[in-house]
Length: 129
Image (cartoon, rainbow, N blue to C red; front, side, top):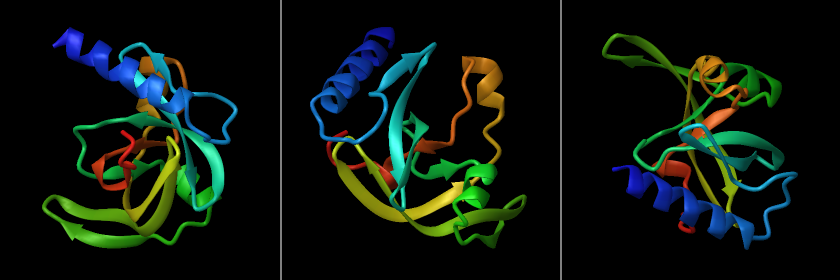
């Protein structure tokens, strides 16, 4: 499984390195995660964790407030879930539009040593990934 992770990191970095993303940095590997620069609704870029297994993208509540993204509470199995009904995410030279879950991602800072703004999941992942 480690070889797959290394291959995914190498491919993701290669794709982003050759793209025209206007960002201060390219994709980078921090410990065991890949961070990619993501622009939300034309603002950013912000560091997002690339998660090819996650069906839904996630944004930190502080970032959602800062960007004044519309949020809605929807009923979930174990309580209400906060979502952003629609946002445009740009990464790797492509863009997609769709919903984002809102969740506290501050735990990643202790784990990887860097604050992240979100998780780029399958629903907002441009086809270049």
